[in-house]
Length: 349
Image (tube, rainbow, N blue to C red):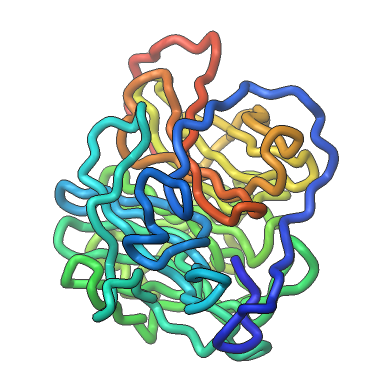
């Protein structure tokens, strides 16, 4: 997530993640392929003027997997964009995921989906933190960042939901579906189960805890329709009463059901451990198991933003994207929960 003081950032260096001490005990993860930037098989630099970017969370719409990126730039950090999106019809992640296209502008450059004012202290950038589709309409949860503070900390103006009815070509920020910048739902992960879409949220920055909300799949744009888990019940319009389901520190997070393990999986950055960690649960409301470290900063310096793929969650391999701040690009990774066999269990809330 770059720091935009002005519309161009040619001489601007962003703050990297700040990490604690890598404790050296990990499941282990394999880098499958670089997905973005110079040297990547997708050639996003020469095809779409996307030289540097981060995040890369995913959702499925139709037959395509869409990848949503954060602050992005062209050569020599020119042409800054707050966000961008690629799509893939690749059905085999074992050798990387190949992009068939990106949402582009009139010059065939990766296009900024959600505009930002790029004014420090007012709205430095607008970053999508999660996406989902109902089969017809796409939705993005986003945060409006006022300014970047110390590494791993920033101030948000608000969070909201935007939608697209033309497969991502144009987006509308819904004016009445918003959360305050100091709420626990400034960053999010979406998962659909049963009659609801669940939203797991964290505050701005990488040190807060996870809280839980849900909404009907046709009511994502109705801010009054969201219910929040208080620890014993679902309450409407009470985001400030939501209970902690996973304690901090939690950086950018993702959640998916894995039918092989018969568990909900949650991945995020723990800054204090300098590691991407994973927790499992039978229910989204918890209890969530203890953290298991997957990969650390000793082998992957300045790592952050692990996003589990929305597909291929029916086997022992766990595929996820990972951002590295040094090259400022996104990589496809895989890991596995060693010693865990298949469990015949359906997901619960």
